[in-house]
Image 1: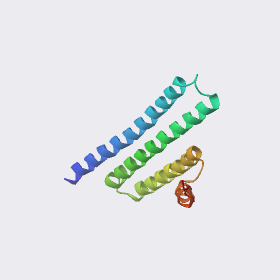
Image 2: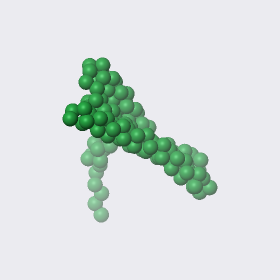
Image 3: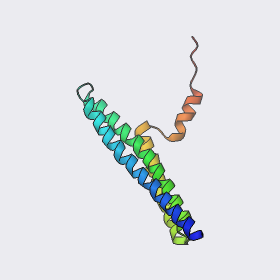
Image 4: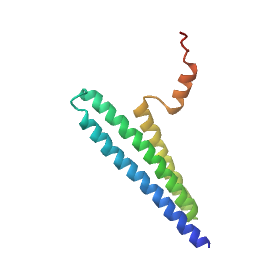
Length: 125
């Protein structure tokens, strides 16, 4: 029974990781298509900024799926100290990627955006 559950978890983890890869690839092609579609209506700088923003957003989403798949496959399939250490290193690297992509896309650290929204003065009309 445990062998069956382990195989199912491995398949689920692989499926989630594959979904992450598909999200990244599809997001890149969609971003490229959108940039080409509006190339005559926008400046090159604006097109590049929007392209990078769209690719960054899809990479963030795809990396979330990849990390989730890694966690599922490693925790349920690999039962060794080396497997857990590998998972920790993979999650660390992917988390650093998420933070750097977020800073690149949004221009600020993830925890700064909520703090800025809370301190914004409200305008009265």
